[in-house]
Image: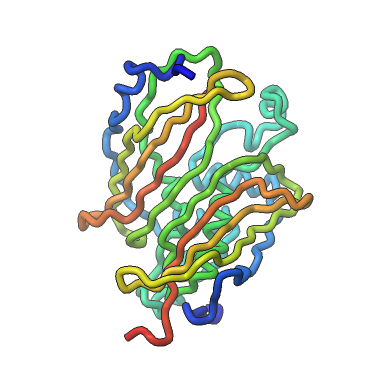
Length: 149
Length: 145
């Protein structure tokens, strides 16, 4: 089936980037996030207990990055509807995020594709977001799929 | 901290200890605040009903967090969650018990790391897998130097 929505012009938006944002990671924000998801792991809650681990102190739980919003680049689409769904995420973890870190968050449109859904055309937008610390270490990569229809 | 699991302790088919969750509307409000996701379908019932939903629904990202919790518990403090992947296929609502579950699919050594691939999912009270996914963890080895 030929693409109706995702034309060459739309696909030309692949590669679009957000302005980088920098966040300072607060210990209280990590604890509040762990409390909200109901995760009592001492690594995410208890500085004293976490000191005795190989991490030497508290770290952030894996999906804490969700609280560091990247300002996702807007994709212009000529769709009849305005509905959007979160399709899911793929995360790659290389280094932990720690209290006091300054994390630079940057998003890029990695892919735009189209399928025929039950309710009409569905457009899958893949956004890749990188989380890099103040030492230049890429800590986390997130690939999320937004479905618009 | 819980007892550390080692690479030698698991084989394909090993069942990851299930994590029971009882999400409430209060938890959705806490999660909205902690994550900054203020989409109203997660805390405003009238808004959710007007959008053809059965009521407020769980943030997909909260279910992602439940699966993350199960996997960091499984990896232990000497392990490391290397990869986590989730797909949101079905809606879940507060007031209904959920389980995060998973099993080991494969274990192998790559670039000196002892890796364990797992199939994971969120299961509702009817036994439906609303949020399937996969994960890879690094586990410590008893024999590695």
